[in-house]
Length: 106
Image (cartoon, rainbow, N blue to C red; front, side, top):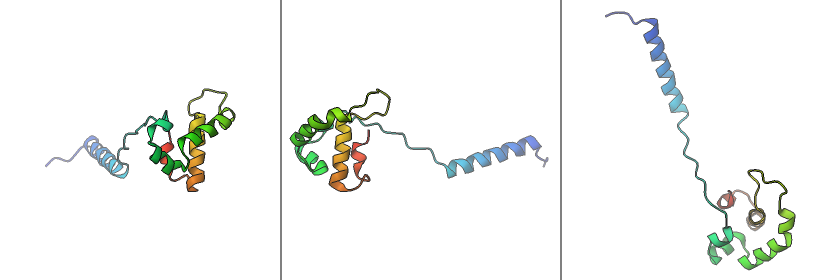
């Protein structure tokens, strides 16, 4: 049997290291982007009340009172709309934790 050249053993080392890397760091799951553009219409009245602990009419009234103060002057990416800011805050007040706010994250 002929001895392997340095090039062949180097390739085997490379492929072995690559396989070890793939086992250590599996491919990421694809990111899922959900459309939460209108959360007031996305949920039924009962679902909304269970999540926020207020009815939609009360949230709309609150939004009318504080919405102007929540608006951003820039249109940069990542700026949350006033309705989303208010609902995230109300959800936090209702549950006492941000951990359950995954349903609102944009």
